[in-house]
Length: 424
Ligand SMILES: Nc1nc2c(c(=O)[nH]1)N[C@H]1C(S)=C(S)[C@@H](COP(=O)(O)O)O[C@H]1N2
Ligand SMILES: [Mo]
Image 1 (cartoon, protein in one colour):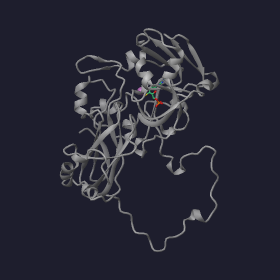
Image 2: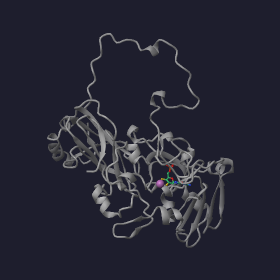
Image 3: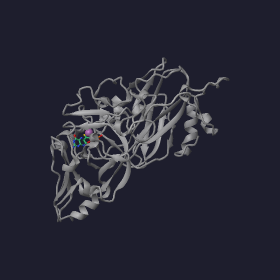
């Protein structure tokens, strides 16, 4: 096993870890730590599936019938058809950096609009020389870029931000308003260049075609550099939940600026201060000041296994601790993992590819001694930004604030192997 980042830090970490039960010794010797498999029985028999003809396949593939329990989880107060709906990704089941499209989280302020691509248009207007109108067919003919990026709702992990006692829930329930996908679409620079920008053009108001006209103002310079109109998600056209037939995509920025069912981009010389930015997505700091236009999602990580409401099958022995880390500012540089509630930390292995503003997978072998343990992960990005503790985060914001929560998540493993959410 190799440790691609922060090798220098390892010996100190290792020494501290041997005492606390982590299998770091093995890793240092270049062996791969595994959960031991039982020996093969002498008479290994032919599986039944080899003795009969299989069943018919489907025109559009579906997950195995045995994986039916892996579903998005609706926010408890959200009926499926309600105007405001939150569907969370069951992150505890994700291994790898791409979230399957059917499990991508969703936040709808005005339910799921019925979108017919032949009637949908995107307007580019305002401070431009030639106002333009694109139907879907036309936009599909433009050159496109493909980017793998996470998308996270500003309100992700709100329960951990607000609840005075830790809620005993799954990772998906607690922090599943984040997913990572490959997005393919047309860079906004192509469309704005074609329209021709006028003097004074500095902001863009993006509006969705859903009932409540979800809209946000974004600085033009950032859109020209990084923004695109996404038409494809994981190689196929966008799912309705993700804004079919097109959405705005701004890598690393809070979910709500990624306007779905995008139908209007108005170039302006100032923000519009729409309800969605002046009301919903501003946040009060502890000093009483208001934080507005906090676009970037900060560095964050979660241990996906073991995680909330899971039970470790054996009361001691080898387990792999694994999870996902991401930062709205760039690449993940390192992830540290603790099994003793933050008293000591070891460097986890980062798995390639380590991409800019995307999920990065991390793992660490763990030899569990069967005693109570508190697992934590702490990510640092390439700019040196690191995750705060929960109390550090709470000190920065007012009591009622819950957006942009990125504090270290802790899981308590009980002597019975049960895993639960704790504040540590
Ligand atoms: N038109 C429109 N765009 C929208 C929303 C919406 O309700 N309407 N919700 C926003 C919010 S709050 C988030 S977090 C992201 C979620 O994107 P997803 O549903 O594709 O995960 O979409 C954003 N774009
Ligand atoms: Mo959101």
